[in-house]
Length: 248
Image 1 (cartoon, rainbow, N blue to C red):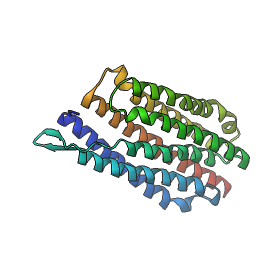
Image 2: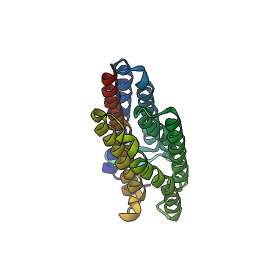
Image 3: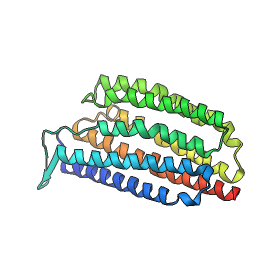
Image 4: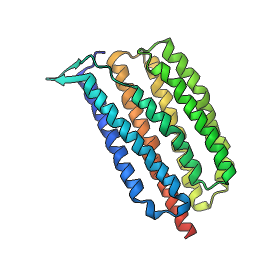
């Protein structure tokens, strides 16, 4: 695939930013575990685990990018080693279900409701990632990518609808001082997740190909990842701290 130097640098810097954001977030979340009570430690541990897994995979993505392309004197050359997009999907398969579980855990629902919602949403999230993978690795902006992307939208829409309406009653039962934060965290999940299919289908809508399509996809996914994991994690931390202080 032919890349301009600007496209190469944009993707390179996005991967660098994502790696730093996730590793720094992990340190922040785990160092602040003493600030929350035992009831919310699991949620914060999972929050740090999500960013740790993401940070590790971004290191792998970064390394794969360096192996796939070289830039000398402003000229980008493909080395013949394929850029491994599977790292991103392995990351999502592990972290996306955990993202939903950490939101449910911090809400402090009953054990039965926590287990039920975690299993249903976690399973739907895994199915969404699995269905989207064949289209991503098909190697082109073609019908294969479109069909598998459309199939992955089925569990995606189930998750979004459940987060939007299914958790509304549970959120309304939260204490007034955290209700707004939990609702905001839900919206961060919904809006950041809606950005993923926008990026996935952007090459079709914008009729992009080659390096332009790759730049939009890789940079777009990185932005969505940072918001959905690091920024969302900060909100989970704030909710856990506020609930811990209220119960102290």
